[in-house]
Picture 1 (cartoon, rainbow, N blue to C red):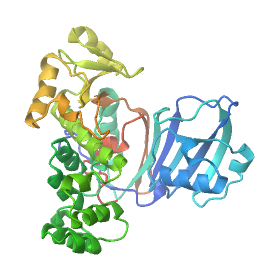
Picture 2: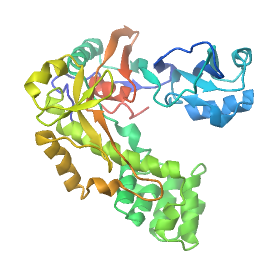
Picture 3: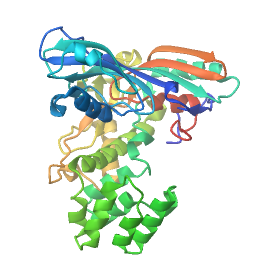
Length: 402
């Protein structure tokens, strides 16, 4: 993604996440606990743990049923994050007395239902960029002014594509039923791998010595080791691939959906805020979409960031746009050699698809310098990423050199 919406404004440069305190995220709840019910809602601040690691630790420490635990969204380990977790069978005083390194329970209140994924309004970010250029504050304010008016390109971005940046290629190969290529991408191309043991294993895999490649893999690569073990036993690429965890396979497919969506965002970047004939406009207040038959009539609502053009997360049930917008969406499918039915996969991997806005509103913007660090604060709706804002401000890949 080399293009920027704010390409006429210079970037600040800088580095991100030199320490967890440089990246703070706080969930904005969709609702507050009612004070009664069997589900205990814990507001938790954590550092150095993923959300799933947090759930495991809470289950062990409190004796809670892991399957009954809920969360609204996943949060990074390399950050200070505040989020709500729900669980059952635990009293508030137990939770508030919890002593886990890197975890603080800030509040505990009962509610009637389990917290579900997506049950949040958005996220509040406070981010410090270090080693920025001398006039970084003025540069950031110029960029943020444009983003506040126009909206932020709603990219998934590089974090969606895995450590090698190729998870979408695995998903693409699965959709195409090219299982050998899918495995090639999972094991990785040696020249893009930085870990020397992994690089050696990948080179040995390309030579066809699957068992030796498995032995050379570094620790912590259990899925890759399992894959190579099954190939060494003579299993077909298809059987070996589908021996991987179902959740992992769906992540690969989701990465491919994300990649195609990001392609459309890039293609519409020059007129991100403009409704086209046949667009399916996304209502930011409800998440519903409607067909734009008269762009001129609806454009004032888009100018107020009440509605935005949308693009598909491709799937066999997704509704595609019509007219000019529809041509763009169908031409991308054609270029990939796909149709909507291509996503009607077996083994419980079928993708129904959805619509997603190609831009998002940016709120509660604040900027300042703290010593030589640039402090940025803003809010984003759920399902969007701070990296989409940071790449516009920095004019570099915010995930590089973390």
